Image 1 (cartoon, rainbow, N blue to C red):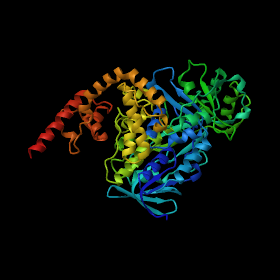
Image 2 (image 1 turned 45 degrees about the vertical axis):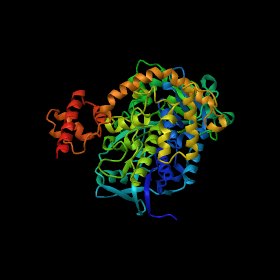
Image 3 (image 1 turned 180 degrees about the vertical axis):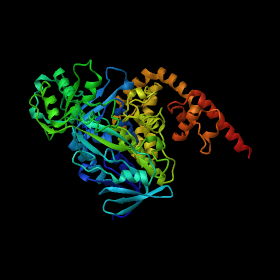
Image 4 (image 1 turned 120 degrees about the vertical axis):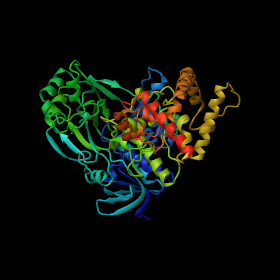
Length: 592
């Protein structure tokens, strides 16, 4: 029976909200997912693809923790490719083009069939806060629903505004309402600082109007590799059918059209003036910034097996509809392309993430967690990574158990969250392998070895599956020790197998020397990395620190010396002085 009291409420049904609500419910918590439109749950409003450089590693980490994204991608994927395959395994990054309709359907089915999880189509408009703790929400129809913890995963919907050229209107996505009152509640009821970002999406066209004969085909890998550790790889490879994407280029005529109409773009005419993503720029930005380039890559990516709709990756734009048509028709193979959807820019509110703990709980309001684009990130994978961590920690907070914080040497997810809460963002954050100082040891191939223990401990990996994983790990250890007698059959290891054991052994052996040196350096840093900063340490009272350093420390309020060291502008000397102050405080307290 539906009620008005839950352990955890999740607001928003995007990738962060799906992972958060599933994690909470699977850990036994009574969970409610609130969404403005049930039919839009797990919608892929931008590129219908999962994974990519560093992103693929995060998807495998989500999977190893017990999340859903990788498993759904294997079911809905229509083209699979491992990027960076010409380089070393440390940067191999799986990516899949998905059927966006199937992805949404499969994820919705997972949510609807999940025990302990209710879904309700209604917008949350206000947070209920008492004594600096969130206690529930009020919905658009005035219903009051209480909860021990609340997770907000609203994506671009917070005070969202859409731009097509010089036209603008409110919206969280095209033809979907924005959430204005919830943003107000975050400011007024929770005291959180709010800022704005912008991003944009490309047009979609009818695939039957494209001349593929003049384009370069981009087929998937043969055989393809799945994301999920739990996918039956042999059966999956035998049945998985793939379709190709296509490569085409802009040209000088395209660039002139954009240059002559730059004032038509909302990104340049002052309408959308918030910062946008540097690493996923609009076509206008590319033309303005890189004047020496006479062409730019575009990838035509099918959106579904059941439609003719094609996504033009690389043609992100805030230009008006007429200019979009002109520039598109100037491209070889797209002279007769017919639009299904215009590209558009969107500006939205986000919460600067330095206001969060590493658990993704807000510092000001206890039991309130934020995940996804609301924290200043971009990308489905970054959102889902935050979602599963927020869901896990919101549940653990209710259960009064120790929360999960992943370190930078454990997971890309740990790097993502540490970067957000320590350094903050001045543009939408996107993960790259270059951000990972331990990328030799946190690879896509060993996500299970790194994180499945945690997934099992918190209840997201079943005992039966964990026993098989332990057998896989034991078998790998035997291979390391050259004990090749009495090795298990594939049936006992399933869904792992002896081929996977051998592949993991070869990759680990290749990097062994480098990883050993990396671990030595990590151990040297560890004494500072994990040293806790007492909550009662007064940064202002440390006379050896500059005023600027004190202000930064007070703003971020780091939990460890390692986190303090990563705050931009904090020097090694500052860390020495901070460590001395911690030691003095400790001696003083022990003397009492």
